[in-house]
Amino acid sequence: MHQFSYLKAKSLADAAALAKANPEAKLMSGGMTLLPTLKQGLAQPSHLIDIGGLKELSGIEVKGDVLSIGAVTRHYDVASSAAVAKAIPALSYLANQIGDPQVRNRGTIGGSVANNDPAADYPSAVLALNATIVTDRREIAADDFFQGMFATALEEGEIVVRIVFPLPKRAAYEKFPHPASGYAMAGVFIAETAAGVRVAVTGAGPGVFRWSDAEKALAGGLKAGALDALTVDATDLNEDFHATREYRANLVQVMGKRALQKLLA
Ligand SMILES: Cc1cc2nc3c(=O)[nH]c(=O)nc-3n(C[C@H](O)[C@H](O)[C@H](O)COP(=O)(O)OP(=O)(O)OC[C@H]3O[C@@H](n4cnc5c(N)ncnc54)[C@H](O)[C@@H]3O)c2cc1C
Image (cartoon, rainbow, N blue to C red; front, side, top):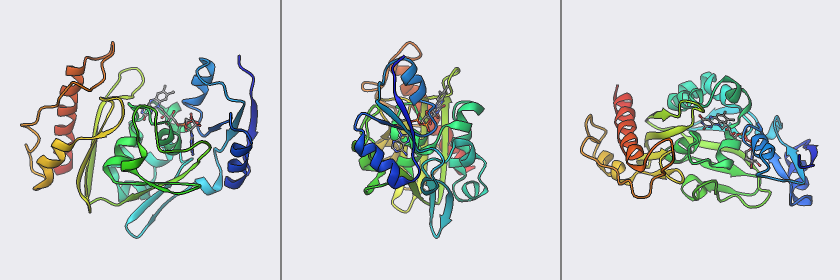
């Protein structure tokens, strides 16, 4: 087993200083992805900087027309928050579909977004809802944040502090979960926002992406059957032993239609 040192950050400033002083260190939030990665030898950090529970990265707050969720907020806390359920019910629903109770009780929204697993649920909500990722250095728009498989705009040692979601008029999420892990084989999040209708797809491609054909089809109004005529080009989608590209393309279409039906119900 690779040797590393464990450091418990006392504050956001402390975490940032520890990350700066130890360029080979890794931040740890819920550890749900990081620890299995360490066990498999896929990451070999010099230090783990534990940011879980830091006050400055905690809390759920609705202020005016935005919902702000601290980076170390666990999926269970998002799923069970009355404030989230009232502000963006689709986000509560999404959080409650992640993995299993153990994963939801440890995994965090900041860890999920920073990790940007191509099959993770939150990135689709962050992108469709036109959220802003607030770090210890700057604010990053969702459209600029996600940069493909496990890649984000985060710089070395940059810490996600919170995610800020403008409240949508309406939103809905539907995914086809992998039967073992719960990760999305395909998930579609539709949001009617002040910036128009935005549709994001996770699980199907190498990274979360906006489904522009669906956005165009819904631009004139959210109407039943508006996605029925769409086909999804499978060329750039993922293919593995779980599903072919064509199967995933079909799943995107089916999840999109289900999300629309739900949103209109
Ligand atoms: C069995 C299993 C099933 C799962 N099923 C699903 C699923 O159905 N849907 C889904 O979406 N996810 C799923 N997950 C992933 C899980 O939900 C976590 O969200 C995910 O593992 C990352 O969150 P974490 O808090 O555990 O992050 P960690 O494991 O602590 O960190 C992950 C990465 O993010 C970095 N990081 C963490 N926090 C920050 C921060 N604040 N700023 C900058 N970088 C940071 C770390 O350095 C690391 O590189 C599953 C995981 C497991 C183990």
